[in-house]
Image (cartoon, rainbow over all chains, first blue to last red; front, side, top):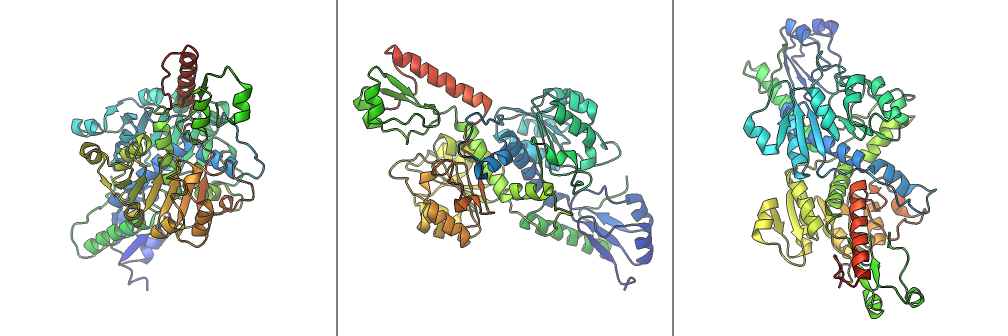
Amino acid sequence: MSKKVQAIYLWWHKPVIDRELLQSLPNLKVIANSGVGMDHLDLKLVAGFGVKMANAPRAVSSSTADVGMALLLASARRLVEGYHIAISSGIKDWEANFLGVEVTGATLGIVGMGSIGYKIALRAKAFEMNILYHNRTRRKEQEEQAVGATYCQKLDSLLQQADFVMVVVSLTPQTHKLIGKRELELMKPTATLINISRGAVVDQEALVTALQTGALRAAALDVTDPEPLPRDHALLKLKNVIITPHLGIKTDQATYMITEEAVENMLAALHGLPMPSEVLPS
Amino acid sequence: MWYHKPVITEELLQGLPNLKVVASSGVGIDHLDLNLLFSYGVKVSNTPFVVSTDTADLGMALMLASSRRLVEGYEIAVSPDTQYFPADWLGTEVSGATLGIVGMGTIGYKVAERAKAFEMKILYHNRNRRNEEEESAVGAVYCKKIDDLLRQSDFVLLSVNLTPQTHKLIGKRELELMKPTATLLNISRGLVIDQDALVEGLQNKVIKAAALDVTYPEPLPRDHPLLKLKNVIITPHIGSATKKTRRLMMENMTESIKTGLRGLPVPHEVV
C-alpha cells in the first residue's frame, strides 16, 4: 500500500510528516497543504526526500480576512458579552452604560500585509478606518493608495498609534513571539489585539499579563498555541478576550476552493508540470 | 428621554404644565405619541445621523458573527469539555454573498458602503429609489418588490423606521420567500418582525439563522424561545453603544433642550 502513495493532501496538519513517514512512502511525489500556513512542515526535510510541496494561498484570503474583521467588530462592540447579557436568565433590565468602542474612524495597524492583510485593509477602508501597516517589504504606492494605508517601517510606530492591531504574518523563526511584553506595552491601553495568524506569533503569557493589568483593552484570537488551549488557561477566563476555534477558512466555499487548489497542485506535480502554488524551502 | 423612559402619557403631560421640550435619545421615535405631545405644545427632538455609523458597524458585526458562527465557536473554544476543535464544523462566506438591505436610509446606505468592500452583491428595497450615483457608488440594485429581494438574498438586513407600514413587515409569508440558507439581521425595531413567525421559521428551518440587536419587548421574557435557539444571536440594543457616540447623542440632546427652552429653533426637531 505504501508504495502506491504518490500524493498526500494534508488536512489540519494530519498526518504528521516526519522522517519515518517519508521513508515509508518511497513513491511520494507531492504534499499539498489545506491552507496557506506551512509552519507545521519541515520544508527542508520534505524537500530532501525529493517531495514537492504546495499550499493554498488564493482560497484562504477572503475567508480569513472576514474572520479578522468579524473579531475586530465583535471585540470592539463587546458582542459576545452582549449576547450573554441578552440571553441570561438572571437579567431583568439591561444596564444603560454597556459601551463598546468605535470602529468607524479608528486607527487599524496591520502587521503583515500579504494577501490576507491587504484584503483586511480593503474592508477596513470601507469603515473609514485610518490604516497603518508593517511588512517585511513595502507595498507599491498604487496598492497603498488604493486602501489609504501608511507604511510603518518600525513596528513600534504602528503599535503606538493603533486602536486595533491585527496580526496577519506567517509564522517563521523571525515572527515567533513577535508580539511580546515590550510590544504590548507600546500599545495604547485602549487598544485591541486581534490575532488571525498563528498562536506562537504572540507571547501568550505576556498577553495574559497585559490584559490583566490593563495595558491593553482587549484581545480577540482565532489562533492560540496550542489549539485548543488547556482548559485551565488564564486566557479562557478573561472577560475581555474572545477566542474562536481557528475559524479562518471554515466555510463550505473556502474548504471547497482549498481542496480544488490542492488537487490542481497535486495533478501538476504528478505530471511533472509547473505547480500553481509550490512552496520551496527558503 | 433615555431608552424610552419615562413613558409619555396624558397623565404625565397634565402633571407637567411647563414642559417645553422632550429630547429623545437615538433616531427612532416610534415610542412617542407625537400627536399627544404636540397637542400639549411640547417640542420633540431626536438624535439622527450621529448613530448611523455605529449602527451600520453593528449590522456588519452581526452579519459576520452569524455567518461564521462566532458565538458558537467561542463557546467551543472556552468550554471545559472541549478536547479538540471539530474538523467538520463550518460557517458560510460573507465575501461574495448577496446582501438585501430593507430600508436604505442613512444607516442602510452605510451598511451598503461597508458590505461593498466584502465584494458582496447588494440589493435594496426602499420607499423611494436612490439616485443613480448613489446606487453605483455601492453597486446596489433596486428591488421595487420586497419579494424579489427576499428570494435572492443570502443575508436580509432590516434598517427601516418602525411605522404602521413597517409593523410586522417580515412575517410568515416573507420568511417563506427567503432562501432556507438565508440569515435575517435586524437593527431596526423588534416590531418590524413578526416574532412568533420568526421562531417558527427558525425552528422549521425555513431560514437558517437570525441575528437581532432589537426585539419586542427589550429584554425578551426569560423563557422566550428566541433565547434558546442555537442559530440566533441576540444583542441588548447596542447599535449606538460606544462612548463617542453616546457623548455626541448627549450633546445633541442638551442642545435641543437649551434651544427649546429659549424658544429658539430646535436642532433635530421632529415635526
